Image (cartoon, rainbow, N blue to C red; front, side):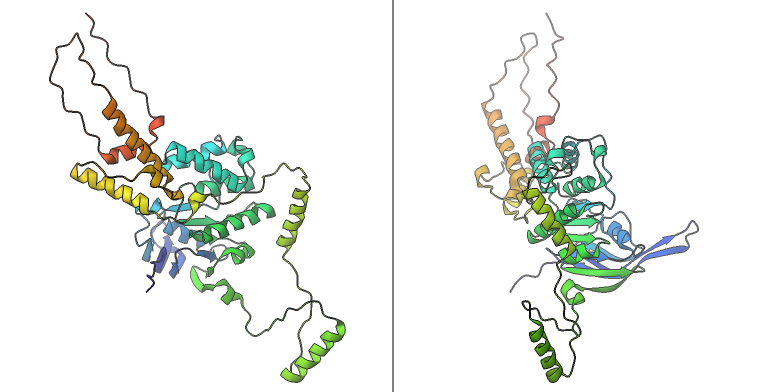
Length: 411
C-alpha cells in the first residue's frame, strides 16, 4: 500500500475581515476558503484585483492572522519558526538593498538561514547562472532593471533550498525571454519535487506551468481543479491531420454531415503560440552571435534544489542530539559517505567537527607562566556537539580573532 502524503498547505473555512477604527467590518477579503496543495505540485492562485490572493498568501506566511478558520503548513501553524525555514517567498515587488551587488545580496540571505560560508558562495554562483545574471553579478542592485531585479529576487527565494516556494507575480516586468526562462525554471523545480504556489495575472503563464488552479472572486473560491479538465471543451471534437486538399475536405464535410447529421463548424490551420514563435526568432539571433546588453540566457537548475533525501542529514542530527543529551561522543558517518547534494552543508560541518577534535587531541600542553604561582589545572570546558554545529553554521572562518594574552604582569 502506498503511503499517502499529507498536504503541504491545508485551509478549512478560512476567513479574513479587515475592520475600521471602530472595529466595524470594513472589507471581507477572504470568505470561507478551503483548499489543499499537495506535495510536489505547482498550484495556481488566480483572480482579479481585490479577490483575496495577496491576503491569502500573507496568511500562509504568518504575516496576517485569520479572522476565522484553520490553516496549516506541513501540518503546523504558519507562525512556527521551523516552518518558515522551509519556505521560499518571492513578493510581488522585490525589496532589495540597492547598494549591495548580486553576490552580496544572496550571501546576506544565506546568512539569515545560518548557511556556512562555502555553501553560501557555491549556491550564489549556481543561482546566478540559473537566472542569467553571472555577467552582471558585480553591479549594485540599484542599477538593475525591474526584470533583472525579479531574477535576483527568484534567486534569493531559492537560497535556502525551500520545500515550499511561493511566487507572487514572478514574471512581472520581464521580457518574453525572461518570462519563458522563469517558467522553465518553475517546471524544472516542479519535476524535482518542489511544491510551488504561483499567483499571477498572466493566465498564459499559469496555464503553461500549473498542475491545478483555483480561481477566486470576491474572496470566495469559484472553481478549482486540474488545468486540462477545467479548459477542456467536451461538446466539441477536434481532429488534427496533415494538410488536406480542398477535394478531400469537401468529402470529409459531406461524410460528417451524412453520418452525424451535423455540419463542420470550422476548418483552419493550427497556429503556434506567439511566445514559441518569438523564442524561435531569438534563438536564431543568438545562434548568429548577435550582441545584446540585456540579461543572458539562464542555465540549468542547480543540483542542491533537487528533492531532499535527508537520511544522512537526519542521521547526523540525531547523533549530535543524543550525544549532547547523554554527554557522550557522537557517532558520525564518514564525510566521504555524504553524496546527497542537499547534505553538502552537513558535510562541511562534519569535516569541521572532525578537524576540531583532532586539533584538540594533538595540541601540546602549555607551560605555566613563570611569573605566576602554579595552580591546579581546571578541567577543560567540554564543548557540546550542538555548539560546534552552531559555530560552523555561523561561519567559524568569519569569526573574530582571539585577543592576545594579557601581558600586564611583568617582573
